[in-house]
Image (cartoon, rainbow, N blue to C red; front, side):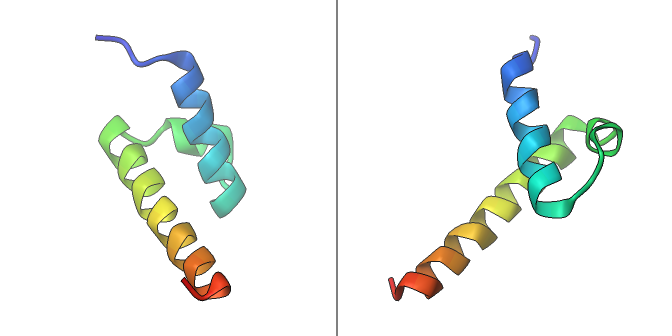
Length: 55
């Protein structure tokens, strides 16, 4: 199974935006580790947005 290039680009952009990591550093992560960082970061972003809006 291959992983869609557009999905990898989304993950790289998301992590680069939030962590200010370079593309090579992000792509060097194992797939499962990269997905875990994306998931945990998304949770933190959602929690911060909920707190900011009082939800």
